[in-house]
Image (cartoon, rainbow, N blue to C red; front, top):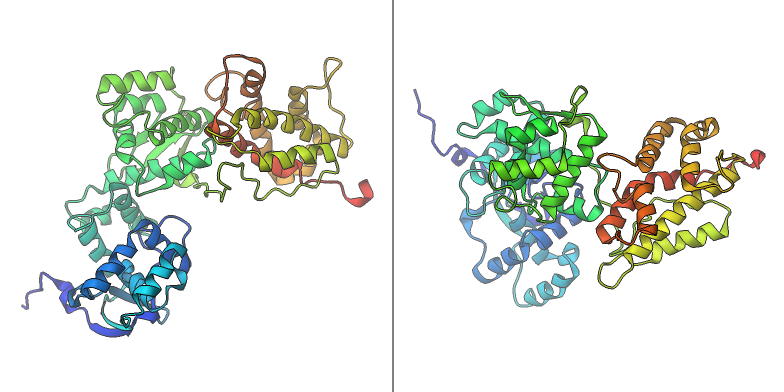
Length: 468
């Protein structure tokens, strides 16, 4: 019986391939969610993965023969599984069209004195699965540049999502605690899906490079924390079930906010069981009910909005209301800076409350809806209550009504966890009247992010011509 080589990759065929014909892998574990096109991948590798350093090394020392990229042939294309930074660097040396602007001129000047490498030898893996095993062995166990724990979690979970059972992954990757990575992925996945966090915090949480997953892990592995939050982990697979409630979402949002802002770390405020108990008791005074539960796949990560720096993101809003005063308020929300140092976060938040009330009143007038009120004047609470209970609003909103109704209920809340979040009328009232309350960039951004779906509806929904 012929013995199998320890280094089975040695049997993979090595062939010459034009550098320009190689495709960077859009599913590369190094890349952040949403980057799919080749030029986006190149930018990511240069901005976040130090591809420029790789390029300079190749320029100074040459491309070493033992650094052959690993590729797989898919749809008649050579897709790079291992060596994306090297290939991106070689392609940039041929033509730096897709690299960030700050590197283009430098690369062009360098290449005035050198001829680029146009063909390299690549090693061909038989299929994607074999290439994935190779990547796992190289980057999750022992490598010059190992992946972070969170990246490893995403690596293993990606295979689970493609049909591999947890048990089969445990057998394939011997010595790897697969259930621990399943827990890590699912708890992070849920964190990126929370609606009540700002885009700034969401950006920090979403980064598999820098988010402090070990601090989150220290909390969710604590039995007392599990009990208070209502977390239930499958002992064999690591899969999690969490309470299906707004209370859980709010409490978990506080935790991930604190981690993102480094209010808590593995060594600060939660370093031992006593500190963790004190911390979680402050966030969740009573155990959260968990009769109704959700699993990780019930959550959908919220994509990062492309915001203008230090300004509210109004992308996706179509302002159609025929009220110039309200439109002027809307234009101010687009322009006003929310920066903590030179901006006006408190003024912005105060404007946000006024804009919400005026927009609702304009919406109701446009659709001939009378707001029921108790006293002489119509207040924000009257408009919110009318929105939730009005049959015509329900008809106008259609399938969106349930979500909008739940959102309005969140805005109205005055007690319990979340009653003082930046999007609630309660918080905005206190900000407007109390000498103890103030807002900052993160708070007003979070308030806007949560209120935005309501604005997207009331600002764009106008009567048909025959109704007007």
